[in-house]
Image (cartoon, rainbow over all chains, first blue to last red; front, side, top):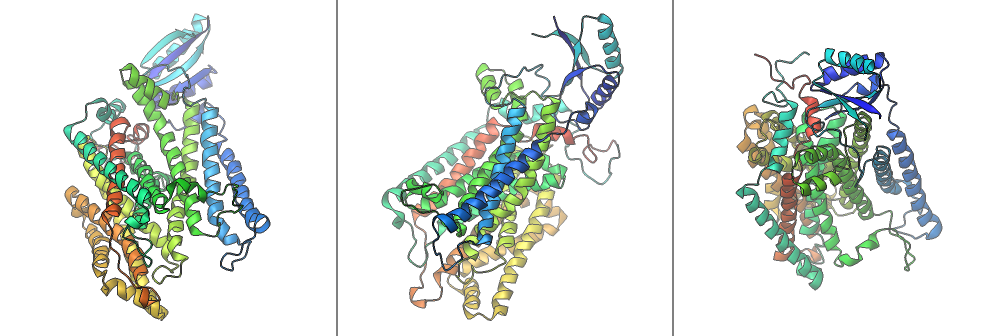
Length: 172
Length: 453
């Protein structure tokens, strides 16, 4: 039976300190759940930077090439039509649509990448640990083993950092 | 942490995290008052009246409007530009102020963004109806068709199609991504099973995991970076609808920046109109404080002054250009048969915001509310003046004409007002009006807490 410890905090400063100490003692943190983004937490946990900007850049670049290429193809190759004596290949007047399509592609791709990578979406069945997390509780979830020393050790650290509540739970 | 003695707290009343959740969720959990039902009834009636008038237009044809061969754009396009402009404040607040790290934005961004989406929806209706045959509206998209033709990529009207659709979609994504954590909060608070299921579905399974927050913040930042130039491009493109034509009064290079400033100006006025009432009715005075109202009023005076300078520049350039037609167009605006529209525009947009130089007036709720309505009216007349007075007398005096809207056009405008307010009323009833998670991040930061003494 695998178990985990969930420690509840009421203040993000305590949470930051506690997670720092836990990381230093090489105690494995499974996840931290917070009601709002706590800055610096990703650094402490050593999380890698999100690659969403890269996704946005690539999708945006595809949008740029697609929009500009399509307009050029339609007006120069497929159906060159004289409109008010303007040149077929008129770069300035292709820019607005190129820009809009770039933004559209980048934004849509990033949102979908975000939802996909985070496993969020309509009908996503993620486990909700505690209903207070979206209100005012900050929770550290720590891997526990059969060894009671481990639990006591973690408990001491957490209590020092003013953890509000410490629970030992079983994975379902 | 250092607390500035001068800076006012962003959130009043020394709120704890849990109190913030409770206060903002309260309007959703409680029963709506009589005022809400009355507001919704009036808005919905207006909307259905507008729908009837739209149906009549589509059934009978555009001839039911007051347009004629000289004046082909009347209330329809005026309303379109007005609504798009109103939408701009929401994106300005949520994107540009986010990039500038303006923390006061957190109390107002959610409702302003919602307003953007509703306003752009209203705006989009007008070109659709104006086509006369809305069922063929898909003709504006470049799809392979049996006519073997492409749409005209050189036309600003087509740029508009792309700009407005992109704007609506990106604003919607931006707004909804910001809502997910707060819908999660609602899911964890509501007790009835049906509500829990619905909020649960809409929350996309939000857990508040640290990795999710990290991605969420990155996403918001980059989306803001994309939305900031987007919002500037949208009204620039709308202004190109006019500026690329050769009609005197339209054919000016000043249009894009002048339209963008005007859009943000009118948008903030609409945000103020709505929020001055909303904060009172929903008891959110501790979150949308007088300091927020004052900050918005400062943006009003900045953008209002840009608009004022643009009006004067237009007049100067018309005179300085030495072009007879250009000179006449502006003389005609100010002294011709539509002088009253020009006078309303000048009074509401140039003179009245200057009163905001007085701190007392910037912080006066009643004054702010009345002024915001003046600006809404003034900015509507600005578009009316640009469109109608420029068209009604152009190069050929034999085709000079006058324009008066019919009840059908007026009805459609009232209908979009109804749609806008119905959407807003439903939004404040079912979604958190203030970004709960974002407000929690600023309560502790500098200047956010009330000084101890």
